[in-house]
Image (cartoon, rainbow over all chains, first blue to last red):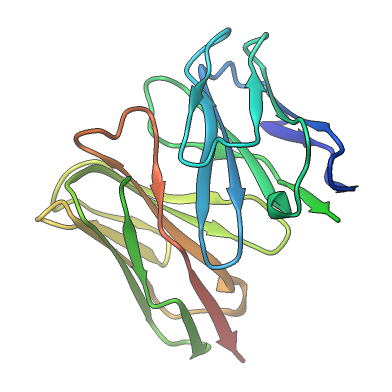
Length: 112
Length: 113
């Protein structure tokens, strides 16, 4: 039981490049979330999903897109990366009956 | 959106000391969670609270759900070096919270041997 895994662990992009971050969970959780973590700002919600095929905007959705084609996977896309998107990205999941979210190890993204 | 004020921002304490930190919100919350994050890792749940006034322990950690439902407290007794990390509070607002948590900005704990 791996829990929540994230791919890749670290990535460097040039401004304007695109990429997709993958989150996978093997706990059969309904809800999945993408956060970004910046120094002194805690965790801010980008997008989330309450089930396969559904997505919703969080606090800071601009510049990101997401897809949840399979229950176990939640993808975060950056179509045209900007230096302001340099951050650590965390994925989390939870079952619908519980508020506790379980986090992945994070993806460190540097946009030059 | 919701806001959580977490204090202190950082603490530098001696091994063996007790630690207290708190979180306050601008609105009523129906769930409070406390997480710990170590360098290079994701947050890990320490304690979950679901009722006003609830006091829950996990080893040397004790957390309380404030009676006003707008605050929560975390205490660590007899701190040890492995307590080092960033502690986050998180909560779900009673109204408008939806399926989302709001996170505090974290308390960084450093322990001096």
